[in-house]
Amino acid sequence: MDVSKPLRGFVLVATLILLSACGSDDKTVETVFPEETTCQQNRVENQFLVTWKSGLISMEIAANRDEFVEDFLKENLEKIEYVQYDQWIEPSPQPEPLLQTQTIITDSLIYGPAQLDASAAWSRGVRGQGVLVAVIDSGVDISHSQLRDQIDFNLGESGLDSDGKDKSTNGVDDDGNGLVDDYAGYDFYEGQSLQKSLDGSDSHGTHVAGIIAAAHDDMTTDPSKVQGIAPESKILPLRFIGPNGGLLSDSIKAIDYAISRGARVINASWGGSSCSKTLEQKIQSLSREGVLFVAAAGNNHSNIDKLFEFPASFNLPTQITVGATTQNLNQADFSNYGDVRVHIFAPGHRIVSTLPNDTLGEMSGTSMSAPFISGVAALLLSARPTASIQEVRSAILNSVTIRSDYRNSTQGRVNVRNAIDYLESH
Image (cartoon, rainbow, N blue to C red):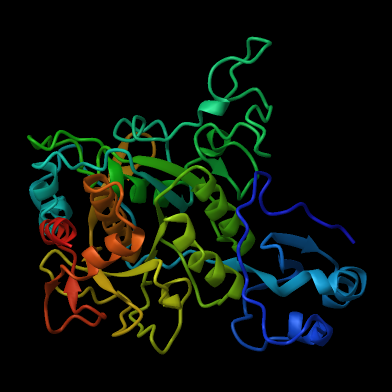
């Protein structure tokens, strides 16, 4: 059988696993790798995610479960905490088709920042300075005029090498982190430089990135531009989703890479019905790294307290799950909801943002709602760089504008002014 390399080619930050009361002698194939009957509809039959006692996660390949157990698991059993199948994550269905927008846009089409009262932060000089937000998605058009100065470029892959070649495109791992030419994020879906992957399939991620950080002059309204919530934050674009979805293992690679680059916020505008202990523990471990995970609730008009979607339904202290409102402040018909597992609402209907090839367009979905919260988190971390993720999360969730018919745990939608005031007073 083939044995893959660890999920990270760079220095690993060990994930601590609490061992059960049972001794190592009690470990069996069945306890380490149980034959699960739920959440398995999208599993990849020949790929296995192994969580080792050391905290390392690796992806192993075998023809099937039996071969994996006989040729790999049994001989490494005492070193392994648990095993799960790799899974295929499908893009959340968009409730409405993407629409290109005219060059001149009106205030009614860019209602999101005003609905959040984002200018309350901008007027105080709080614009996301010094905060890195990882957009783990379908990729980002790094040449877009409103995004190119917002991208967090890797200095280790910048400049010229000893042969006078551009390090960003020389096909060499110049910074020794195991990834070649990761100059502007990385494409884990294709396993290559993100610059090679700008093929038009990155509309979703580009749109998300613009909501967070599209550059603008907040003192005036330019009718040909959109306003990012945190326009001086930096975006780390990480692709793991292709046209038909992406692998769970690649999403974990992207999360680990985001940690290694110093991201404080991770935006996850994706999900599905497949559950994963591996992903859940990875998100839970972000508390030690000081990283907030912002997840889209999903677009199936479902109660995800009962009909779980992941990662939205994990309900972890490192996570905020976001549903959608419309321009008239109603809960969007398509938005998932839940009195426990959905935490807050943000604009998500007909949101205009950046698209590839220096264009703008409107999209709808909780995929658009999540980056509004990621942008707000960046504002708060900019306002108080020493704030913990728990303090930022608390400020966002305890400062909402309440409406009694909202089906989320706070019964509210995000309010930037209130969130900053809350953070400053606590």
